Every structure is written in structure tokens, then in C-alpha cells.
Image 1 (cartoon, rainbow, N blue to C red):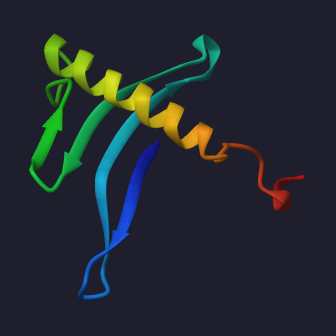
Image 2 (cartoon, rainbow, N blue to C red):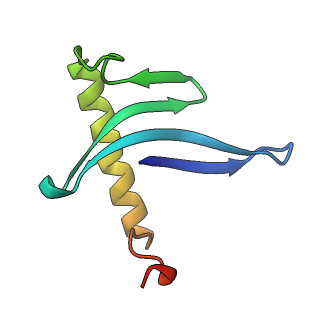
Length: 86
């Protein structure tokens, strides 16, 4: 799943910053960051073949994600079914 915050650049373009790819594990009620991108660069938690992991990057980005999800929940955002899915 992708999660992004968009802001409007003075040129009128909508910029995703930050932008994350998140793995969702519904059975475990858990998510984890796979990649993160912002105006300063791109970071990934796992190597392309998933054989290597950066524990410090994983901890830092998952901590950021936890805070971000808390903030957007407190702002009233939620994930749920679209009305058209009923």
C-alpha cells in the first residue's frame, strides 16, 4: 500500500512528500515500511531480493510511520469501505 502526504508546489504541481510503500499484514493487524521517499532522498528497509535488512532504518521508519498514523487518525482520517463497495 502507498501512503503519501501531498502539498501544492508554487508551480501548481502536487508533490508527494513524504511517500511510503507499506506492507500490510491483516492477520497480524500489523504494517511495516518497505520504502520511504522525501525531498532529501529515497530509503528502503530491505534489499531488492529481501535477503538483507537494515535494522536501524527499519526501526526509524516504522517509528515515523507510527507517529504519522497516530497524527492522521487524530485528524479524523480513517481507512474503510467506500460507499460504492457496499
